[in-house]
Each structure stands twice: as C-alpha cells, then as structure tokens.
Amino acid sequence: MKRFAILTFPILFLTACGGSNLSKHVDSKNGFEIGFPTDWDTSSTDQYMAFMALESYVDSTDVFAEGFSVSAVPNEGHELTEIVEQNIMMAEMYYQGVQIKREDITTETGLSGIQLSLDYEREGIQLTNYASFFNSETSLFTITQSVETSKVETYKPIFEEVINSFTLVD
Image (cartoon, rainbow, N blue to C red):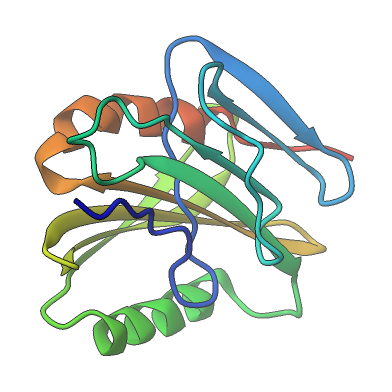
C-alpha cells in the first residue's frame, strides 16, 4: 500500500496536529512559536515551510501521516481576507468537488485569524485540511493541519491545541 503525506496546499496552506503534551518550537527568525506533540517527527522540512511536525506511522495499514506545518511569508500589505479568498479560489481549482467552510477565529493567546476547513478526496483517501491564517505587521502565517476525514474527531482537539499555542514573538 502506498504511503504519502500531503505536506503543502497551493501557496499558503500547511498541515497541523498536536497533543495534550506539547513541546514548544520557537522561530525567532520568522517571529512565532508553536506547540507540537512531543513524539512527532520535526526533522522534515521544506523550503516553503518554517516548521513541520508529522505523526509517525502507527502501523503498516496507516497510509497517511497526519501532521502540520507553518509557513511565514512577508506581509506585503494584503488584507487577510484577500489572501483567504485567493486560497479558496485555488482550492476550488485544485481539488475537484472540494467542500470549503470559512470561520473567523481567535486563539487563546488573543490572535485573530481566519480558518478554512476543506474536505476533499486525494489518491483515494478522503481528507480534511484546516488552514488557519494569521498576520503581523511583517509576516503572514499559515498553519495547515491535515487528517483523514474518518479521524477528524480524534485529531480536532489536537489541532485546536496546536492553533491555540501559536503566538507571535519578537
């Protein structure tokens, strides 16, 4: 059986999961910190991501690596709603039949943002992505969390914990 992980979503989407026992990643270069499950692999990275954490495969039948990543790109004066609308248009072009929900969110640390929930099929697997968008004066951050749709109820609390751990740092 083929194993794969969806690590990026066109342009700004990234993946995320977590747990009640979070370690902390601090990225002073990009100005953020975020929690991640202690037992998740953080050794993988990508040129478009500031940070990534993936759950280890549980067994040989596990074909999708739940996880998350964070992107940080320069804030060039675009409104957050404009960036989100562009990502919605791209998702509709990229994923046939995608179901998208948009929600304004505020983290426990007081950051306001926008979260998209996307349900779609990829390589025979039904997936759900949560893409959360935040901005600062200098950067736009996207945290993308991906999970098999059948496992959303298990991972949603973990995803929320990771999002709520996200803070901006100097």
